[in-house]
Length: 314
Image 1 (cartoon, helix red, strand yellow):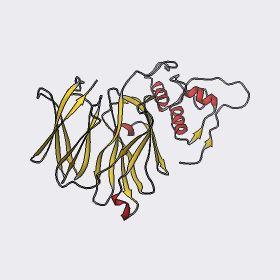
Image 2 (cartoon, rainbow, N blue to C red):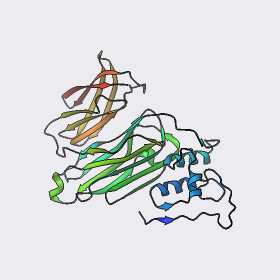
Image 3 (cartoon, rainbow, N blue to C red):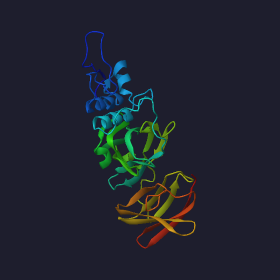
Image 4 (cartoon, helix red, strand yellow):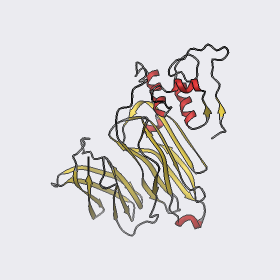
């Protein structure tokens, strides 16, 4: 990222200026460019004046976030007749985890920042750190849904910032970004990266409190098909099922209720040898939320089947 610069408004001169909500550039109109200024401000590429910050807070929550950028984009696209101003976002629930972990033979490690929840989203602000004295971040790629939104991805000195805002909502239940790390030396290949999620905000709602550490552990290929349980357990509404495979193959995941009825079936597709994880959002194959209770999940790889239990508490 470049050094901070002061962004100069278009309208300058005398002390008379018309203030228009959503007009971050202060040129008297609202455009998608105003949304882009918010993202640049949040990634500390630019500094906005107090008047610009006042116009940028179109949600009326006394702060400027990626959700404000999304509302501006929706307004420009004609999807919103006016800005919410003093209203609050609809109460929703999302979970963010690092999953789908793969350990490659060259020592590199791949994973995904994944988002699940019960409501479509239009904006997000995710920030996390890693130990850049042990690992390099080789690639970071946005998912298809995020790639269609206005987004900024920046990283330096072991910190990663992922900002996005769009006018069309995206469904949770998949990747936000995919990452690939490599150890900086041969002696670091035995180290286990720890990703520390310092901020996770969706549609202007903070979905974590404090910070959360995610260890990309067990960086060896298992000798056999193993099931390492699910986290969290108990859970609401989402949990992550962790498993490992000793060779490249497909894995079938079936989830049953306590009465033995099949409620959800997940096919992973071909996975590489190593450790992986899959999110279950407590919904059945029809996309309907299931009730609280004990559920049995069954994983099958080749001719081997493993089972375990999990508890959903709504």
